[in-house]
Image (cartoon, rainbow, N blue to C red; front, side, top):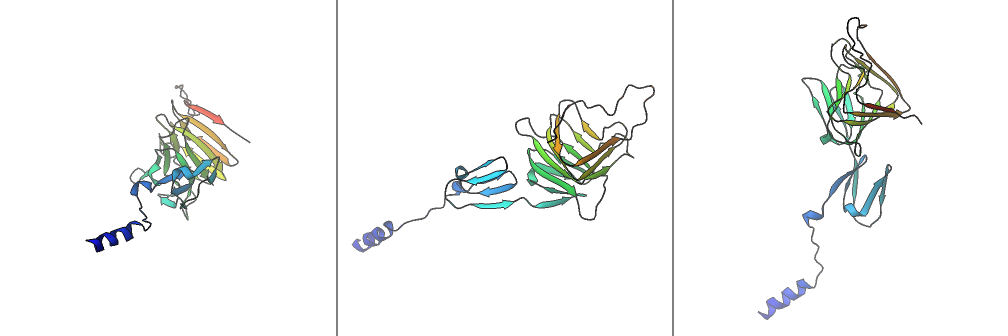
Length: 212
């Protein structure tokens, strides 16, 4: 018995490292994925700052090809419907959308349903060309529900919709803020109205243009 007690005492004075599962934490900070103590860093205005020593793992979101687009951002924040050829953003976050390799134009469409005024969906549209003007009621890019979108333009972008839709459709109850240094060619293939009061260039939601 005395021998067993001596052995137990010997091991009890050695440092023991316990890796508790609850201490493992993964979080999204802007364009980064950070694993480690969430109290040990901050993310403000695009800057990730570590304030407490510790073990951290930082990685970037992968660029994923979906349909004729590539998307960089949290994969659980968007989905692509292969049957409808629609890329839908459902959760707030930072995303970059560009054309997939070898693609210069597409009939795939983009829809935004997520975001709030305090936590909007943020999409950087980079040299994207969508032309669905041959399809009536087809919207190249559309905000629905109560979506709130900060859209940053980079390069030359084209959004051509079919009759009955604006090039960039902002429905009632949604909010769109546009900024960036890029260009946007957005239009509808609407026939000039005669016996109707329909104005396909009218936004029903709130649109704000920001130019630095």
